[in-house]
Length: 312
Image 1 (cartoon, helix red, strand yellow):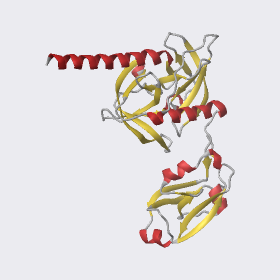
Image 2 (cartoon, one colour; image 1 turned 180 degrees about the vertical axis):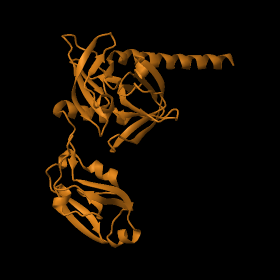
Image 3 (cartoon, helix red, strand yellow; image 1 turned 60 degrees about the horizontal axis):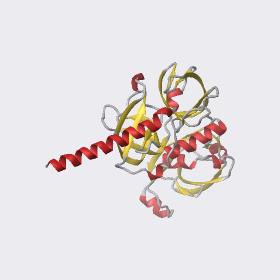
């Protein structure tokens, strides 16, 4: 029995050492962000002052102030923000003193059950650490803009207001996600935007100041497609996007799309719902003639849309 207790103690010591080492490695790259509407956390991405955070942390704020772990405080400028991915990048001046920065992992290697450590500034308590495990990967989360964020990591590491924008890290101290949301009043349901998504979006924001997506100008909802209609037109779908309204002078209007049409295909891909259509509205479609398949009064039609860039 004593041997069992010793083994348990060794395991707990190993876990504690792993968490402590990870926190020591990444903490110098975790910033506090104060705004005129509240605050949150951020992850230093580069020695020259680029910091990643959530869009909802900085949205609508005229004042951004960053507090670094060593106590240095500096005003920040917004480089770019994307409401649809809930990510933003800000920059501070480094005054010749390069910043310690964190590395973003390849989140495709993250597995359920591995250690997950959240670091942030909940309720202004700087550098608070919580730990747990990755509960699930590949989740989807609805952004405040209404668009679906894909490949979200679920964790039971406790998050609170102020953790937003801070890192979720693995046992090596590498960032696997950007903490973004918790479900209240549930316990142990917290979510982070996967680091691979964050790296891609941050790169676009740093380069262009915005995340480019295409726009066709329809408002729609996911509706079932009758099985008989699917069989008649040889469609391997059970649902599509019912066009509820069309913006004037939009690509959809120009192409002849009509209210009541059901979009079932776009750019050679099956469209089973609104979220599937959103995933296909990528930057590469801007200005490109794109075949769009619809059902109209039970008949199948093919239209050609030329998407425009979605305004930020």
